[in-house]
Image 1 (spheres, helix red, strand yellow):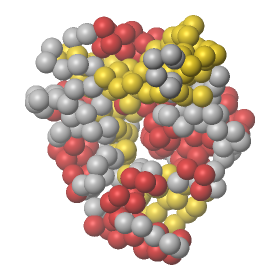
Image 2: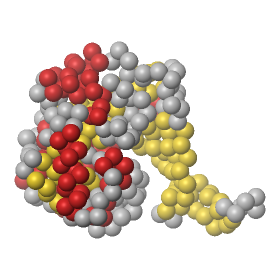
Image 3: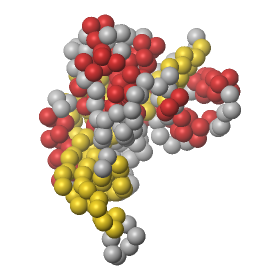
Image 4: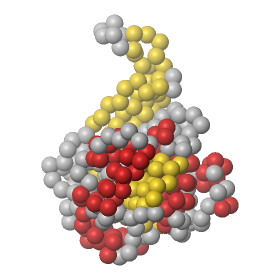
Length: 312
């Protein structure tokens, strides 16, 4: 599927709802050990901010040439304002509601010589429903979208996920969910769930053979009334499970530099491909290739239509 064979993404519109965060990268050199403790000293020389979480899903969609609307909540703080500016530059239609009681999640990654030295998280669990009274806006945005992506990072933005799935289904819109936690019952009725290997293991239990994996996947798919379940399996590639059976794709990564945000790229590519009319199988093929590109880049990254066409 070279670039010319990819669907036309220019009119494909995806609504992304979920938890957003600011990914902040500090780059520097390490040449000595601290006299205060047995740790290296990083002399920071450069910093870079990027959208993270559901915001990274949205920017991956626009990077491929699609249209993305993002519904989420940020705090009344510097990080929230920075995130809004970054998303505007990425051509994302960001509906970021400001909640003065919430602090925008910030993840700082200190990187030296191409390696992540430490990650520092600033986050406060919400004390209330952060998207309370936003279901009416969600209903309006669903009508204008071709596909809905719910990106759950467990930060409180998807408290009403079951209602959102019901609303989208009632309007005939496919719903893709990047799940979190060990209770998947709230995602019942979604079109597609995209857990990674460890997330799926937490819910379904361990397996020793491919047949056992398929059995567990089919059991979960049936119990949750899903059209499909896709498990991303790191170096083992991806596996798509539908009523027709299992479809396995080996990993496409040529070189792995950083896996942060790879799951965002996967679900963004899946959603955009489906919004443009592609089948689940073709969407997974493209998503697998897109993931292979972004893990070769340092930091939370995106893939362009040209890059995706080249690897396909």
